[in-house]
Amino acid sequence: MMQPVTPLVSSQAGTTAGTVADAGPWLLRPCQDTAQQARELALELAELRRQELAWDRVTVLLADERCVPDGHPDSNGTLVREQLLQECAAAARWQPFFTTLPSQPSNDWSAAELDCLADSANQQLAALPWPLDVLVLGMGEDAHTASLFPAAPGLARALESEQRVAWVRPATAPHARLTLTLPTLLAARSIYLPLSGERKRAVFDQACRAASAEAPISLVLHRALQPVQVWLAP
Image (tube, rainbow, N blue to C red; front, side, top):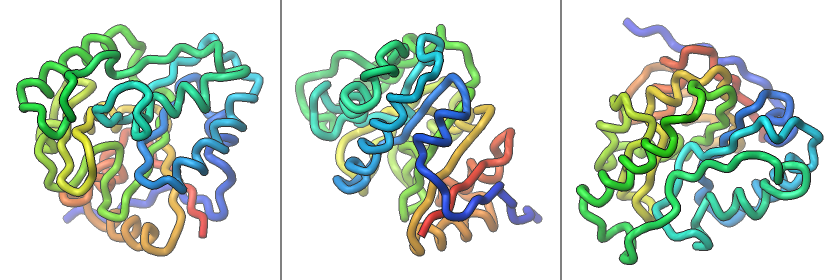
């Protein structure tokens, strides 16, 4: 019988930016699903980009990305380039999942087109020095993390693939996604999970009890090679 997991929990966490700035030479940030979260992230990134780190030794990439063109309001990459890779952080290396996309909306793409996009992303990321040093994840109230959405087409492959990147087409959120696969996430040397609010705390507590593909964050909590460091805020 699987025992409940015991992650490293800190209450009243400080900003994501401050902790990540101390954590090491790789930075990740997952996609955000609301305008409020995006605004909060922009403030954190503005603080982080002013930190006097050895940015020329930093590679920045995302845990996941929506399949939208550069400049689209839902593009995580655009947010990172405009809000993080400025000032001191302009010296960092930026590694996107893709640079060009088919012209039609991603919800209309075939599985074959998504396969090609994921294959291209895997080729681009192959030369990076894996595993990740620092991984900052988020969690939705449906227990998704990165773009590992429960019951989504593509999820099974993303949970098991030996590749770095896979596609997922969530039924509960817009746009097809590219996401780092579960094995890639699990191998990270340091994993951080900031959470706020009673509803997410309840989801987190349930995820700690047992690992299930119905709650992808639980797979990270139970199977990560290093204990997940969780920041809890009201």
